[in-house]
Length: 117
Image (cartoon, rainbow, N blue to C red):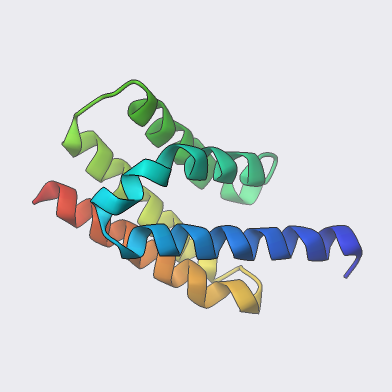
């Protein structure tokens, strides 16, 4: 593995850690960090055709949050879709990221359920 790949893997792992930490406090606690966190993921996933579904759903979520939309149904659907895609992506991830991706997928799905009430 060359240095750029190692660096990207390390960056992705630290992004996963930051996202999981933000979501562990619940949806309300994660809201403050959501914008920069989502923008960071969009940038990280840019150009990765295998994860384009996640990237485009993140863009939808980011746009909804930036517009101040309060349609909790749409936000819940977006979080649910991201949870499903993230859980599926774990199967193709590097071994050090698989568990974290599964945890993130579950956290996103849980957040969607909380919004749906």
